[in-house]
Image (tube, one colour):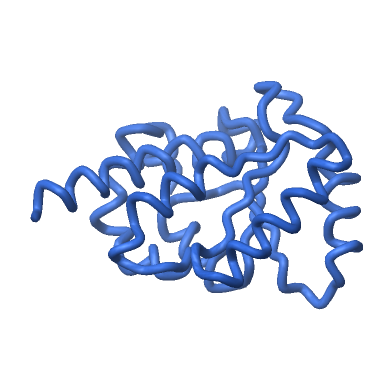
Length: 159
């Protein structure tokens, strides 16, 4: 069983490491790609894992139309640094999170935006036994960090 858990932590850590690299601010060698999460506890969980770039929250008192317009107007169709997704969508992998991921993702894509759904899908596959939320990753941060740091070694030095 521990081998299975190690493999899942490796998969999750690699996905988070790639996201952390893309999220890192430009002056720190990253792509400045924001992560969109549901709320404050999700932000804290990502910061615990070494994320240093912009993290936007869905739950800020805005309706979805205003949020989607803001994300589009602020971040554009694609990331100017690596030509990849302009935003990483990282909602929880429960029913509500799945609905938010789908609805917000579809609305952003309707503007022509490139979005990253892959990070969330990797976490869904790898971390489902450990929990169904982004904030729940915080409890596993210590075990995930070596894998994250291996994929994104630069982020390790910034703390």
